[in-house]
Amino acid sequence: MPTYRDDAVVLRTQKLGEADRILTLLTRQHGKVRAVAKGVRRTSSKFGARLEPFMAVDAQLYIGRNLDIVQQVDQLGAYGAAIAADYDRYLAANAMAEAADRLVSEGDVQPQQFFLLVGALRSLSKGEHGPHSTRDSYLLRALGLGGWPIQLEACAQCGELGPHEFFSAHAGGTVCRACAVAGTPRADPDALAHVAALLAGDWESVDAADPATANRASGLVSAYAQHHLERALRSLGRR
Image (cartoon, rainbow, N blue to C red; front, side, top):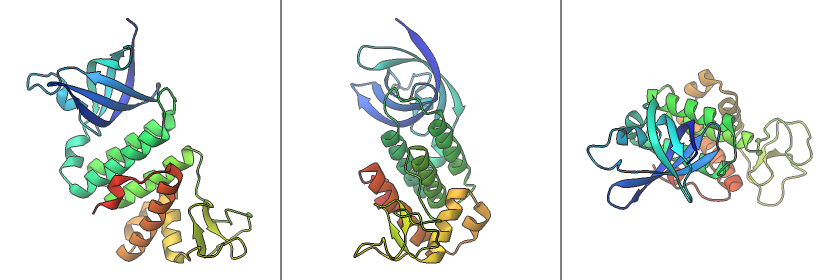
């Protein structure tokens, strides 16, 4: 039976039978893959700990009829334990994994999405920045790669250069007064500037922001992400 090898991130796991797990993997060269890891829930398993959520691995799999089968695993990035030890990091990682699961389909090869997620999980595990900031920056960039770049410098409807004070997740970002339909909320300029810093990776500005501004910006990112992913991200609703 044909086999292949690929770098992967474990997005989520599901129990199967008494000792197995079904894994959802984001791979570098094969898109999203669902695979069975046999016997990994036994204490004697040689690679069960390497196949926990948020771990980066080099995996060898063979192609099954419905699900691929994990044959061998080498660890590339042990991010899971450090993330799971901190509740805010854990929630952030779950939101990121949910988004990646939604953005990449089975067989849809998107190496940029893979590397973006690996980098975000690595940063999250090391605590380089606040968990919410790492999550929000990841979501903005992942959505951009997925075809939904947020518009902050011009009106997302007519293209008139800003800055503009209204924000519409449906429209794709900031909108001018003429394009803002009834009920379109105004966005705080400082919050919009914070969103722009998250998108650009301006971590000096992001880390220096006051918590109230960061929370307002996070609300904008959350609304934008969940609208374009067309479903709620469960982990975004928890604190």
